[in-house]
Length: 326
Image (tube, rainbow, N blue to C red; front, side, top):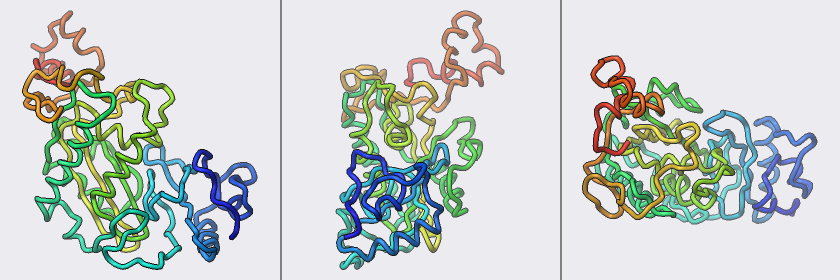
């Protein structure tokens, strides 16, 4: 065997060191994608090979090395993948388990929520299950619902088959800004259950509520999924030929600058719900508007801005969502 797989606690910095048994490269820099992919093909000739992947963080678009373990699904990662998995499992037939994940057919219909209302509802249900089970528990977690408009905006971006995030202005629903989670995989399409597992179950153990030490490159998909005031989700899939594109939009957007370590209020479930409570989630409490400024509530009290149309739009949540969660 051509060297041990790097320990999961150590960030993987490149494949050259891995081939020689060391988890680093000269200068700590990642290799160019063509070189990396070629080396992957060579490395995969070793018995029981588990290939590394070059990842690009979807927020910063910077190339990063991520710690991968033998349990990491081939073809899936926290960022998006830049070269194919050249290691073909001995059993790689449709429906066969690959590192604990189920492969699905590559046709758009089976994976595109726009064609399948049952799939759209399942995506919503998985999100709500994740949101209702957060630790510590949340006092203000809204129940999510499907947004056809958000899904269409997600589909518009998925259909371009371009990497990275699109401009925030292209994701808006009316005046509501929307966040975005992305996944690209080259080794074959995966079910939405598996995609959402990557963003939630696999990232959640790395998140510490209230900690300044959270690495948003690692937990950002999860924090968006459990952002309390986000209550609409719309997702899309596109088979881009050589790779698969998964996109979800979240409205209103989460991961607000400076607030990432507090995606929700830690408290007894539903303790901050002005409406009904269902499975630890708040119902009838959502606000479709957002505040552009964090001090809108203070400004409204001091200057009565909600009676002025310009400020009413800038501080939409404060002015239009009294008694709601935002």
